Image: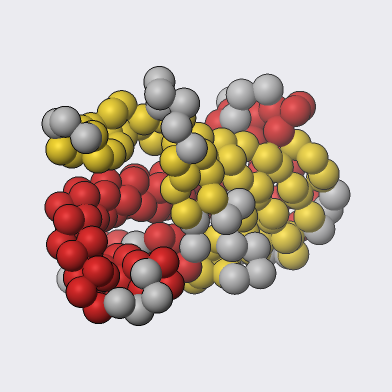
Length: 217
C-alpha cells in the first residue's frame, strides 16, 4: 500500500513539474507552482534567495522585486557543432556557442506563483568564422515539435520565391541542399532539446526550492 502511495506521489509531482505551456505573449513557457504553506511575502523572499543562489551577480540579474512580482534577467549556454556547406569539402561542422538570454517574470499570490520564461525571437550562434548564424526561438523549438518535413516545406517555399516557382530549378536546388537540410535539422533538434532541458531544470530547481521546508538550526 505504501508503495502505491509513493508511486502516486511521483506521478503527481512529475505532472506538476512538467505542466508547462507555450506562451506566445512572451515567446516562452509558463509554469504554475503551487506552494501550499507559503504566503506571497514568504514566496517573494524565497524566490529572491533562489536567484541569489542560482545566478551570478544576483544584483545585476534582479530587475524588479515586489510582493506580487519579480523580474530577473539571466542566460544559459549550449555548445554545439553547427553544419555549413563548404565548396570543397561538402558539409563541415564548426564548434558553436549559443547564449540564450532570457527574462523570468514571476507573478506571486498567496500559496502559488506563475513563472514565465521569455526569450528573444532568435539568438546568435557564435563561432570562430564570425558568421551570422542564428537559432530561432519560437513555438516549434520551445515545444520541440518541428520535424524534417517542416524544414523541407520551408526550404521549398523559399526556393519557389527565389526562382519564380520554376519547378525544375526548385527541385534541382532542393536536391543539392537536402544533405545540408538534414544535417542542420539534426543540429537544431539537438539544440532545441538542450534548451528545453535547461528550462525544465530551471523550473524544477525553483519548484523544489519553494516547496523545501526550512530546516531548524
